[in-house]
Length: 362
Image (cartoon, rainbow, N blue to C red):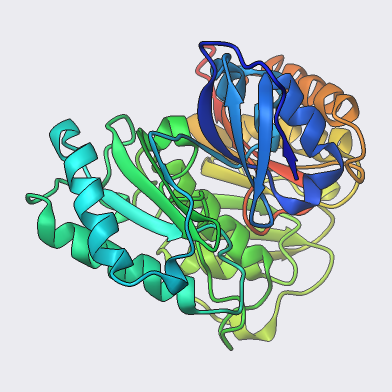
């Protein structure tokens, strides 16, 4: 879909915004509130917009609906598949345009990462390989080596062409071009898709705080069947997992795991136990889930991490989930749980992942 008004503001600049397909019913309203004066659809969930108010993309109430964003400094609308020498031409252009700006790293992805067509995945990989040959040695060779506040050159490529820009990962709201972390949900060792959510959440957190040390103790509410539990254990974390249903048998006897077969409402930690982090992916009303978190927060250390899945009704309007979000954040803050980040993960559906820290109120 392309909407191009006759007169754009002189200050309107191009931005690439990723709004997950699940929010498509409200996508146009989200973009309007971001100040989009023109809109071009790219792939299943990218929008190239022109806006004079880019701060609304990252700092407004509707920012939560955008998984990733990028100021577009260079566009090359073309059909790379039919162009002889595309990789070399694109690589030389990127060097000329962005070399003087000294990006900390260069990462190139696909406009349609879920496509079964492998061509553009290979193209992105090959283009990055050639670009890295041309640029001087970069500070960040892998995504997790990036400084969250330093500028990276991000590029996305697809049948619509090549779109590039420089911005820090934190401002983009993701370390990858496009904001996705790919998790092998089809692996025989993957217990459930929820494991992919916590894997991506922990990766995302690197933009905001240092990873928890090995051996950190998590309290997990509603753990069954154990997808998230398995991912935490794989990262050498300790987990006390609570659920009325049993965990997957593949977790039996795993070092670092204590499973409590009980309702979360009935669980009381042992005297003297303090947790370093709490994970809540409970189903049911968000207010009820938060009440469990608030009750158990007294057993969290100051500065402890809380990863909370805010589950909303099917998103058909912007205002309803925004109202619920404000209510949850305000209620949490009243008991010393401070929101410091939020996102919509690749494996989230009608839900947002919120990150809180327990404040030291003493």
